[in-house]
Image 1 (cartoon, rainbow, N blue to C red):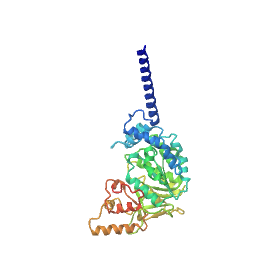
Image 2: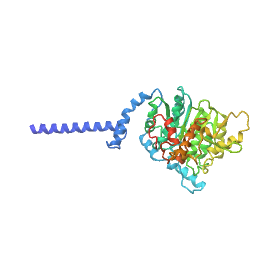
Image 3: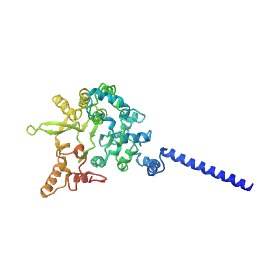
Image 4: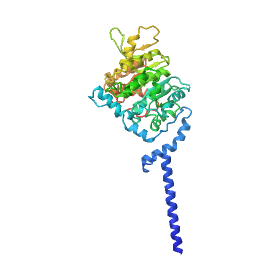
Amino acid sequence: MFGGRILVRSKLYIMFFFITFSAITFLLCEDTRVPHYSLNYESLEKLQLVLEEPRFQKATQSALSHVPVEEEDDEEEEVDRGNQKPLVPPLNLTEKERIAWFQKRFHEFKIFKSSNLTRQFHARVLGLFSHECEAQFFMTWISPASSFGSREQLSLESLFKAHPQACLAILSRTLDSKQGFKILKPLIDRGFKVEAVTPDLPLLFQGTPAEEWLHDLIKGKKDPGEIPLPQNLSNLIRLVVLYKYGGIYIDTDFIILKSFKGLRNCIGAQSVNPVSKHWTTLNNAVLVFDKNHPLLLRFIEDFALNFNGNKWGQNGPYLVTRVVERVKEEDGLNLTVLPPMAFYPVDWTGIDRWFQKPKNSEESSWVKAKLIELRGETYGVHLWNKCSSELAIEKASVMAILILQHCLLCNNVYI
């Protein structure tokens, strides 16, 4: 009988242990929302992030209206892991084949999808800009959050170094995530007003010529082209967002040197005729426009009518160049074309020298002269990332000195 009691108690202890262990396991899985992970380092890191979220919200609620919580963690990982390859069609396809390829994979393109999160876009942008903003800045990021690196961070830092009270909306689905929030947090914690916002393209384009272009693309009436579609979407998004909200658009491969205060309705020339001194090419990497500016509407109309996804620059720099050239004689245009020194003091063909340390006294003198020159009428330097992303920033180079002068956190300068 005594042995029977021991056996019963043993069974009760085993049952109690099993129930307790199951409950703890269930709670851990529920709290972290990652039931398919074992309790390895990655799971613990996710658990810590979830547990710390309320503290993040408390620290940043004065600056931000939204702290991202993904609808599904799996979706965030899929967006980041995808590396945007599905948006790039295979080479050497015919127009008909590309359209068919796009139609077959359209469901994979998350940037075109509306959701509860994307439908908050307008309210979130207005919420960010409801703060006392020295200036309204926009950027786009249609790449994985993991590829938003130190160079892009330095661009953000230089923006807020020159405009401490500015508001920056980064239009990005991938950065509007826990991973993206972690990237922006060092700036948010210091009180800077920056937020990644997932755009809703059908709603954003509504009421503009971009609406019909998007409809035709989705319905297979437009050739998406061989050029990565994110590049052309960024060209269009910047035009529409400035038309609807007004402000300043700037690419993520810029180092801003001084405040844009006083700039209004302007665009920068990339090149000029050495004889006539008249601009020959404009660039859309920086755009400064009032809300509802008629020239922005002309840009959007040209994009929709003359879209060509197979020709680099057709829907970007060449677009703004041909439209301004076409309408420059019209009265009341209200546009200023700034000289190359404003935003493009170095061309993409010469950017590599700016990253190199001087090897002798003559090169040291050139660096000093270049830095003095930039203190004049230069607002920022376009880094031409496609050409310079693989270049190391060497000590004592023009780029290294510019970054040290205009960074805030100044981490990983020599990259």
